[in-house]
Image 1 (cartoon, rainbow, N blue to C red):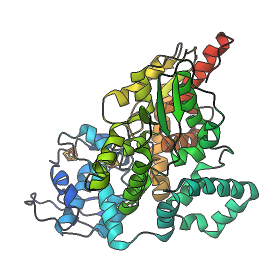
Image 2 (image 1 turned 180 degrees about the vertical axis):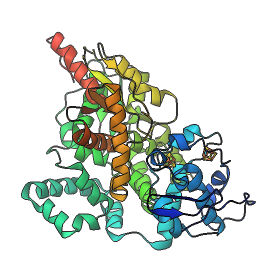
Image 3 (image 1 turned 120 degrees about the horizontal axis):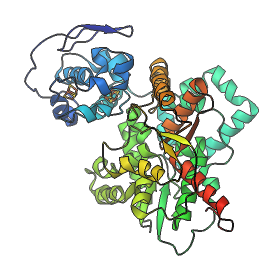
Image 4 (image 1 turned 45 degrees about the vertical axis):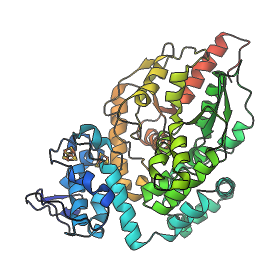
Length: 457
Ligand code: SF4
Ligand code: SF4
């Protein structure tokens, strides 16, 4: 049981006492000093309720941004311990930050919850399996390649089932849960596919480095291949640096040291690349790289390079929209809805770009999708941590997709892609779930069929 200042509520099997009281004056924070001011900005207006996916499926106060932030502030000020709110207020938040859109003082609840999880892990230590994956596997490209070979071999030989039954996947924590969630891995990773691609078409317009997300590389490499083909067909040379993970999973799982270590390694690898831009096709990881400057700002040897890497990094849809998609597009007579990854910025070109690229495809029918900006329940390792909540949020999403009349659901984030494919399997057989660039590639191929002699990249 834990305390807050807003009223008594009960929900989800987790009884919560929220005590009424006037807001106390700020005090010297016991910890989390870097987010204390932001947490203190909440004015209790409650506008965040209506846009919070977890509150909509479990309408109790501690599910809201207001409730979570008030409890974290109570912990910072010493009225309770973080352990008291670990199960519920800290665990069920998707850290999607969707609440910010409704919040006048822009309280970054997702970031505050992430920092509270990090603090809790620092107080209590990290699970051994998770630490192994975050520190000894994800930062190292060779280890990631080895994981792919071993995972494929385990699936083919049946060892994967043995690992599941023996509890090894559980011991691996989030990584093991993702192995369960993803299902069979494609035989060829995005790195394999990159080696077999043609040269850029026409006179090169520029040279870009594509971040290949370690998760998408293994689980949905066709999406990354489509990105490379569309860029090549639009006249861009594509280089694929061998990088480790961006560090976003470490942030989500509360391992600050691992997050910083991965950022440092990637900055070292990216700082010298002779390219015009750095692009990524996974909105969440790319957004995380865009924060490297802020993340490493207190590390003088790398701060300037980190800021430079961040400023040269683009989500690939926004990059292509600005640069111009020059490859011919052919008609697709599809009814399409776009599901916005919650890792997109609140507004601006990055949010507009997918719609505008889809809008440039002849004959494509765009269908409005209610609550498109809401998380699908697939963020990070949420499926493992909160399987029932994740399933409820996913079912709500698929209801909205059904109401839209779309036959193709489009997104551009790997965890959304995997989660929505699972949702289609459970709730909407026949619904195709595609990465934005898979749709663009299909349109290019449609143009190619109509104009023999020209090949898509
Ligand atoms: S970050 Fe997402 S899940 Fe968490 S309180 Fe805000 S809207 Fe709700
Ligand atoms: S919208 Fe923002 S200020 Fe209002 S209650 Fe929610 S978190 Fe607090």
